[in-house]
Length: 289
Image 1: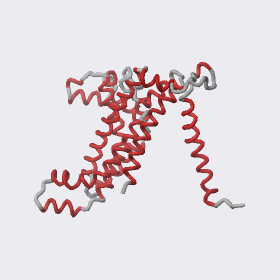
Image 2: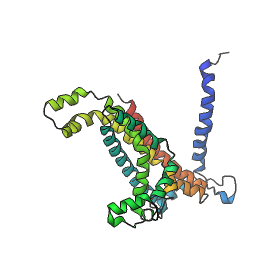
Image 3: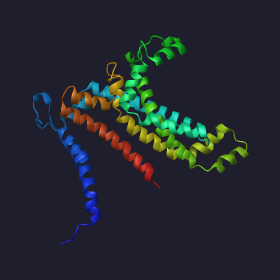
Image 4: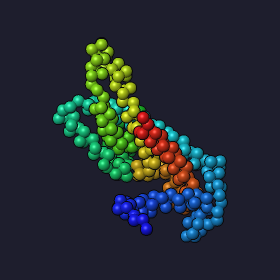
């Protein structure tokens, strides 16, 4: 009888944990998406309906379509803003010095904070009565004085994007700093010797060499933005109306407010398909030659 190698025994607990915490929920929710199960009707999944949940989602659910649009707006704005802030901050902190090193340490603080806490904090900042951001922005931009940010669809989306950027930009800045550290300084110095301006060096020398790292930042942030939930739940609760109700929040809304578990599972697998597509692109980008 063939003996099982030691490394298999050592890996078995971890593999069992992954199977119990990841593979089983994924498989069960996949089956649940083909059933009609409302928690108000009983504790067990009801009848098999096949693709009916998916057909209803894609053809006869305006709220689902609105959540897709909100998700697209949120993801694009979030990724572009995070990339711009991370790249600009990394270029400023590229120099070696005590202040720059101290700033790098401080930058990790927003990232280690809970997204739910960040959403609650931004909700206080934007409070129309005593919010400091509301007060400062009203002084700088008079037309925004007295405007209730979280009651306006576009301003609420902007606030949600700002909160998520504040959370993720420091981490992405460190990633970009790592990419900048791998760029040979000789290439930039040679361009300056040839008379290139700082902008020309950045555009023609630095950014082309940094492109693989920036691509990874974009794909990673896309994945994180697609599944963002905590900050939306605590900051806007999907409102006003459904203006900030992304697909992740829509799944929660269908499953735990309407208690339609089969329908929520189908919507969750639409989100899973988007995440898998972004993850596959990320893996191709990382492991390509």
